[in-house]
Image (cartoon, rainbow, N blue to C red; front, side):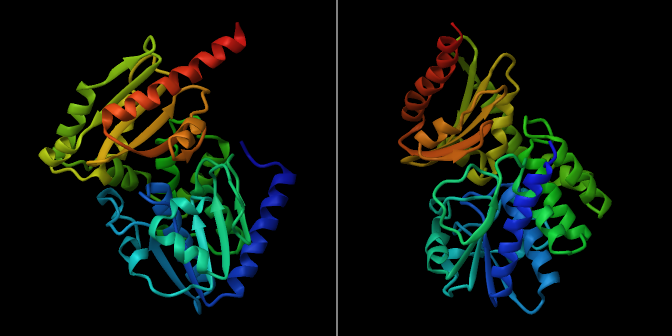
Length: 342
């Protein structure tokens, strides 16, 4: 979908308020959510470069919410080596901009920096919670944060270059599942067209993100594929990876986000679940809806969040405990519609 006139005007007002905060600030910190994905990283890097071009006199710092390296598949992004772990950042920026999140609890180590900053802004496409920011745009109809960032860059009059365009293309491609998810709308394709015209390379993004897996990862993927199990008459499909799997294969947990798409391929499944054991006492889950089911509420119940069709959570326990908790919730969701239509 494309924005109607009223929504474009509302977004422009939000952008204008963000610009005011930027102009009042000398130091600006940008940060996305914990366990950042392609949208989070690409959007931060694209925005950072654009701010540097528009306001070269200001200091812009790219923060990582976690004390960790970014996933290897995203290190091709221009500027990926500029990220600073929030735990190593001791200053207080004049402005803190949250990108691809609108809940401070998903900032992990960066939350304290955000909360002590005198000015806060948000550019996000997740359903918003309590407002803690002074200005921003939170629009859940956008396919990716990268869509909103591109439109903000256009608002401030910065011409897209190939580096910005490749960062934002990665953001949109990954959050739409290579334009296979339900959020791949006309706005996403319109923005993507602009990015390609500005020098973004779809083949380079695809090569780095989807066609450069290590053999050890492919072996792990095969193991995950072999474990795919269906539940509730095949309407739910799930699989998992354990700590032992990761240790045996030499694959880092940060490389595993794409494994949910392996499970997504199961015919007949309406909801897909992938679990990965990230520590002896903690499990991270990815949920995907292949139809119109809104799985974001279940992710929130499990301590996470996200969109209608793509969400995630982290919970305490092991794989079996996570399955025993989340599978009944998924069944109840599916049954709820049956009761409503009976």
